[in-house]
Image (cartoon, rainbow, N blue to C red):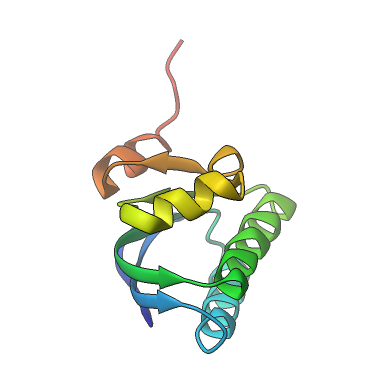
Length: 116
């Protein structure tokens, strides 16, 4: 799996997950997020439109990402999920933990402050 930043908007970063999230790649995600959080990033969108497989360790790393971001007052949103990956998130009830969006733009806009 490749995980790389595609856009940065202040403290919001959009990461694209490409390939699979499994035992070999979950450490990469954890390490990269630790670096981002240390650098002040508080809002992350993970674009999963190119994600093809996810293992139990991959799910665990997403959950750890969520927990780490919450600890620092941040948030993570997932977008572009499809096929069996959506089903896996539903079965594991992680669709209730993460906010899921159809595409990057919808997820990015969800971080905009609401005007009252």
